[in-house]
Image (cartoon, rainbow, N blue to C red; front, side, top):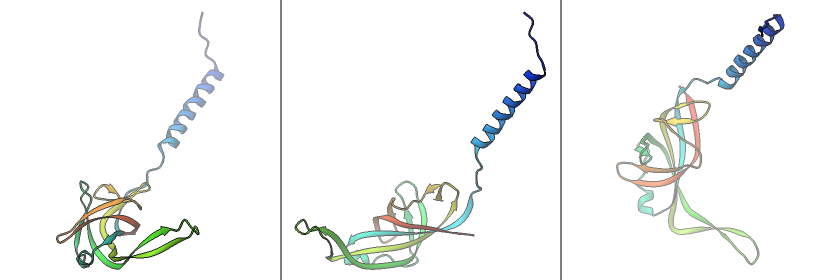
Amino acid sequence: MKAKWNLMDGLILLVLIAAVAAGGYLLRGKQAAAQDTEVTMMVELTSKEKDFAELPKVGDAVVIGEKEKMQTRVTDVTVTPAVTLSYDTKDGAVREGHVPDRYDIKLTLEGQGIETAQAVEINGNAVRVGMGAAMKSKNWAGYGFVLAVDTAAQ
């Protein structure tokens, strides 16, 4: 049997090739360029003793992460009395109470990073709200959680 090739077969083949090319272009997506940025994050250390609460100072160099090694510096320190929430089963109320001789420390940290459409990164490691942060400085070390992340393009 002899294969017949006509104009309609060529048109169908051309449409199929165009559809595959368009699908590949759309699936590839547009990658936004990475942008150098100053990353600012707030980290909270909870229920610390008074002696520890006096250690973090503005200007301290802080390394975040056990393996990640994200270099930052302290730009603000806020120390408040530690609070705890308790649930009263009798009347169903939630009460806030102060923990004696304990303090919550909020540190504002800044570091050089990059911002992409997917993540904010310092030293190739993503920084996200809610992530745990092991921190180490010259005179102190602690573990807290990231409460806020902000960027400022350079």
